[in-house]
Length: 188
Image 1 (cartoon, helix red, strand yellow):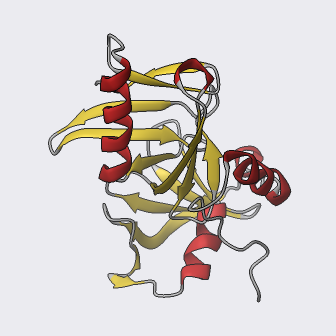
Image 2 (tube, rainbow, N blue to C red; image 1 turned 180 degrees about the horizontal axis):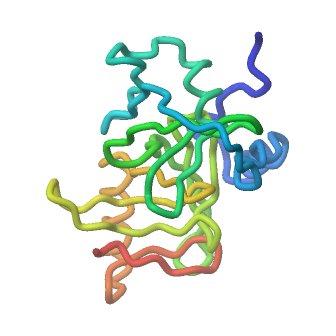
């Protein structure tokens, strides 16, 4: 079965073009409204580096991973599940479900908007619905962005360092960046 949507790449796109690509794609399936009674384990795991595994073996088909990502959600207890109208299957997630791998920006200071693409092939604009945050973990600071349905994406280190450089150059206290009219501190 062919993919409905090709992955979105931020590299080389203006923020306006990225926003248009996001709009054209439409929303994800309504997994937040599905509450099936049939539950179990998917035998899947999403590693810290974003690799999806099934019974210990990496899933090698990116299109398959992107399909699974569309029906993933995070439960109120913090667990992750794949959800369809008829079943809900648990997925082990080591850190976050996704990784933000590319970034594009327009504007400066309070007029800045930041666009991110994710390893799932999706993209988003950092805003009130997709806020940036930094969590302190045993491995150090974990910069994250809210994606959908409680899911988060950890920012690739180069993206975080670029944002930190901007925050320090702009001299905000606490250090942080503006996007889409909102200020996001970059400290835990």
